[in-house]
Image 1 (cartoon, rainbow, N blue to C red):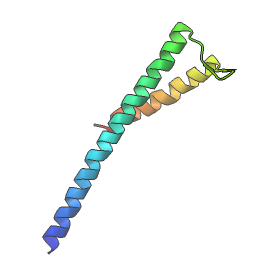
Image 2: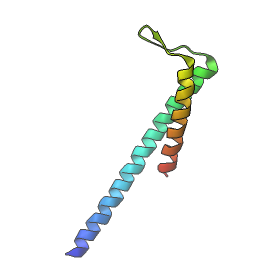
Image 3: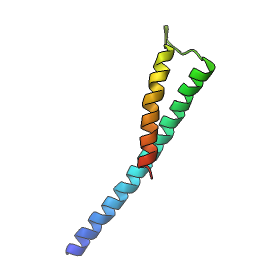
Image 4: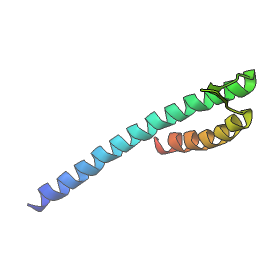
Length: 79
């Protein structure tokens, strides 16, 4: 009957909400860790080289801003 349909719809929505919170929590943690690594690179002046290409320090400043926004939104959405 209708009760079974609506009940299953509510349960499915609840399961999706739990998965969504888990996903946003995991991404928030990852963005925060990478944010911390870029912050440490800037603070300690660490170099970064991929192959023969040296990553400029301005890249970490840009990444710091972008990752900060992503981490903040991830933490906000995971609540």
